[in-house]
Structures are given as C-alpha cells and as structure tokens.
Image (cartoon, rainbow over all chains, first blue to last red; front, side, top):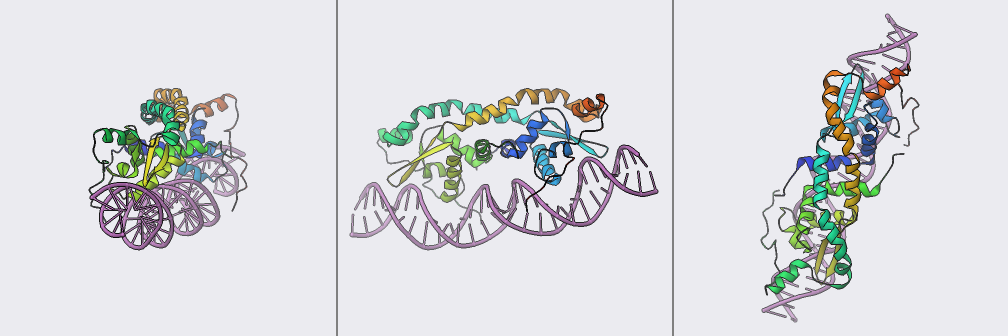
Length: 135
Length: 135
DNA sequence: TGAATACTTAACCATATGGTTTAGTATTGA
DNA sequence: TCAATACTAAACCATATGGTTAAGTATTCA
C-alpha cells in the first residue's frame, strides 16, 4: 500500500485547524490552563479540550493536572519531522515554479511522456493491471 | 475570532493524508497522468482524482487536460508558507524539550501562573467573561 | 461546610472526508 | 467506424471532525 507515516498524518492533521494553531501560538507564551487556552476562542470549553486532545495525540502538547487545573505546554518532537518533510520538497516546488507556465500554456507533453516517446514505446500505463479490492 | 489562514488550513489539511503525500512524491519524478498517479494505490481512480482535487485546491498541484488525458504537476507556492509557519515554532519546541521533564515531574507551576503569583494577584482567568454563542 | 471554580463526561448534531460502484462522455487508434 | 482508453459525474456509504448542551466530579476557598 502507500508509504505511511502516522506521525506526519497526525502532525499535519493537527496543524490544519486554525483554532489548534492559535492554541500552539498561545502556548509559546508559556504553560497555560484549559481556561486560559479557551479564553480567546468563541467556543465552549469542551470544544477547546477536544482540540487540545488532538494536539496531545499528535505529540505537540503535553499536559499535567495540578489540583483541579489542567496545564498544557508545548512538546518538542514531531514538528521537526513535518518541517523536514516539507523542506525535502522545496527544490521540487522551486523547480516547479520555473516550469509551471510552460506546463500550463505551451508544452503539451510532461516529462514522463516525453521520456517514453523517446524510447519509442506506447504510453506507460502504471495501472494497467487492475487491483483486487476489499469489500 | 481566531487568527485565520485558509492557506495554512488547506495546505496542512492536504498534507495530512498519506495517499496525497505519496501523490506529491510521485510528482517529484515529473508530470503524470491520472492513471499514472492511481497506479500504485489500492483504490479506485475516482478516489485518486478526489485526492488530486484536494491537492489542487490547496495549490500544491496544477492540472492540464490534453486529449482524454489529464496531466498533473507540482505547483510551487503554499508549501513555503507552511514551512515558515513550522520554522517559526522551532525555537519554542526546542525550548520546550529542555523544560519538559521539569514541567511533567517536578515544578507544579507553569510560567504564567508564577508570574501572576509574583505580582500577588489571583489566578488570571482569561475567559472569566462568558461569550455569546451562535445557535 | 458549602458555594464557586475548573474541568470532565456523555449524548447529540451537522457537515466533511475518504472511499465505493455504476453509468456515463470524449478521445484515440486499429 | 467501432472498440478500447481515460477520465468524469453522480449517488451512495461509513466514519471522522468540530461543534453543542447538560449534567456530572473534584478542588479550592471563604
């Protein structure tokens, strides 16, 4: 199947929500209680707690209960992996910018097809064989 | 409401799925048709097309139809913004790693509370005033 | 002790997401 | 021209997501 990283899934998934990014931003000011975090947001405390739980599952936040108060703090690890993943693509998307206009307006053939045409083959169908599917 | 970036939402959202990351990886080898992209995945062509549409809406992929074939290619812009966002947090999560053990096991009071205690105030409730909510 | 605080849990809801199958349309090539 | 190719569109489905309200529990403080 597909090369799979549960870490990247949950990291990017956690960062995809503006409320959660705002919570992380708030935590850069230091540890905060649930009510602290909920304060700026126009949503209920349980809703904010769900967001915090998503951030915790993604490893972006750690929690600790002191008395009746739950404190949250930024946690370190997985953002590094996400940043590395994106950085790895930088040269490709920088290259892509150069060739974008040509791709969209002038040259009708992408690299893969041109290679294969040079080899004087028919179009390479990577999915010629249909797969068995569950269900 | 919350500081909001539709671009970061859709960029991180698009990157949160392993199939879509695999499609981007495949496109680093050059432009590819829909069937090319669908090839390695154990899912139907319409499913892959939905993923490509998500990537296109996020601005990560551009498309072009030539005859009956639809070609896709990496597009440049929004990964930069996402990488910048993450990079901006690096110093915080590096710092967080140093203070994590103390936070979790020894020191019961986070920075914000300690500040306020020094000021001899009661705990600052950022959400003391309840908000009006829609619905 | 008893009221206020700070979560916590549960049930619920609407919409989004990620997949399917089926039945098309438009192109291509023998 | 006619069959095969390569998408495309629509209807459908299960589960996830992001929110709510209501009713708890556990702590704290006067």
